[in-house]
Length: 415
Image 1: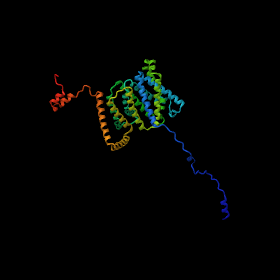
Image 2: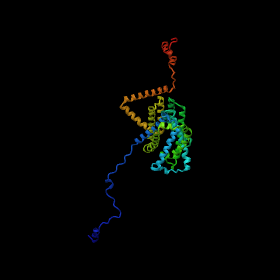
Image 3: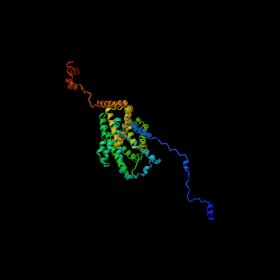
Image 4: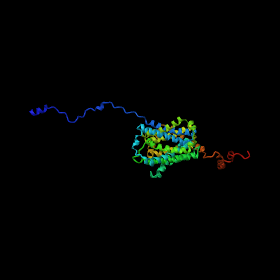
């Protein structure tokens, strides 16, 4: 071995300039921290349904049962309470920090927020006035026409292009609401007109908000929107209340309802807006649509139990048709076909496993449908009470059945 080779073998290895990657991942040895357990989306859905139903039933109880006949004052109180709460949240919490991204100034506020606030105030006033005349169940049935009003308003305001196909998709809602209106037992025209006005004003407000939020700079969640809209609406509603309701209101009216009751009513109304923020972030559009339908059904049932609101079978059938049309409009034909396919396969599988039960269910459904239709027509007054088909049957079939049969069906003269 040469001297050069011996010297090179005895040289020490120098440390590399770059750090050497470890052969074992140190983080792999550490136990991964478990993720934070969040609330199930069902909690937010249940909270929203409960708060939304509670606000409607609470308002109905205050205005109708407790005889507090001042709906504009009640709306003004809700908006004033919301203004105070949102201002406190903006000052002491970070919940409304997203408002800092909205380029808001006095000119923009007067040009965009105030007109929307006017529509919001009018819709709230008309909506609360309706509780003085109509039942909660019928009000909810009429509210099913909201998508139609929004659709037509968006066409009129040039926010979207008219489409006969879309109009056909919502026609089922119109048919259902018309049937429900015919079946309404306690129909009051002034209450019906107030509700229609509330729907129109709310549709205009929603389209104006849609046009406002179409710009990238105006992105607001429901709480931030309430932060801007509530003060303007409170001032406008308060001005209307000072003219029409405050002069005839006394402290005795407030004491009869109770100050704590009014505070609880405003708090629940405000918590409803908070729950909407969480519901939007935790669920999908499908879940929100189905949750809204479930809420309406439960609200109609609750009004029947709490306020003894009569609902005829024909009215229930019409509302069912309207809800089916609402689901079809919200989900679209493709989604409905997908879910219908799943349901058809499940129904066919059930028929293979339980053929007798399947036939019994079909027969029972047919009988129930006939009962609802015939009973609803009778209760609604479409067929007069004095209508007696015996004379018609006698005239038409007396000759066929014979003289004895005809005489048996008619009362002899002189008897």
